Image (tube, rainbow, N blue to C red; front, top):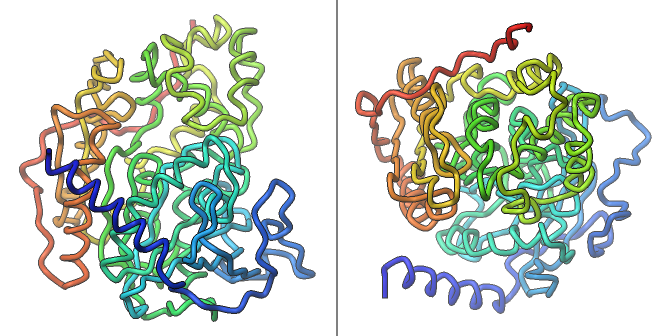
Length: 446
């Protein structure tokens, strides 16, 4: 039996033990605990004052409920918070996060775990899965309990934000970042958690969770310097860096091309764009079918799908759509600030295993959905702009779905070391060259 299999079995055993143990959180709720549903009033801000009157991270509602696994309540208790945050356009918004207390911790250290639930349906968010909803896309947050349990057993309280917001703005990185940072603020300001402004935090996430993790680390110094002072490091894998490159990379993929319409819809939502006029009849049909889909629905559903097939002939190049071009440039991490905390970044580069055979100039290869050259370029950029504590692992023989198995154990160990104050390892100077992360330019006019 492989070491990975042994570890997986061990985690399953730990999960079973932890979920049948005595409750690890006890806090009164301001709102009666009810199972989440589409019309659950907990998710709506209904206060008398405008949201703009509250500072980011202010707690608006609190409830305590059993932590559910696949809809089944467990003895573990979770505290959920509705809090004030900021959307992709800088407007006040309300976000939701879940706090789970470690049975062995003391509240002095916590991990903000960003889920890879990747969905266009708000009902697939982690908080709804924790509250008992069972949806196809919500299966991902349930499975991710396997990653939360090791953190809880190591003494970390876990904060689990709904990173996509309440509209499910898929892939809207800046919004993911502000939601994550304000989730930490809310968790430390609530009287129903044992966390406080002195609690130290680590950030961790894979794939969609890596988007939130990296944007939070990048935005923290300017958007939330109070949170930045409490951060010890960020660990991530399978990162989306420059979405315009990813659209080219997955174009025609056998498994991952469904990301194309998901990205179009998520970007349109985040920035209030109407991109339907640019789509062909077929593109509109796909758009309609994917509008509320999760990555579980889209993965492998449209083998060989291309942007060109979705768009009208005159918009065969996505850079010919001005609104979309401006939006995807806002989502490019290469144009964001450099984090001031240590980072551990991992990336696969065997996308052919998942049916992505693309190797276009300026884009290159990747793990099937994420572009390896972009991730290398970002890591090198961080090294060159002052953050010399960047560890980078590239797994040449693993694809996107394979990397988490080998990434998660060392990522947790790496975070342990940051909390213990050990010097962060660095691969600066040894990271291979990557792609240009310069903003995309408009397509030449015909």
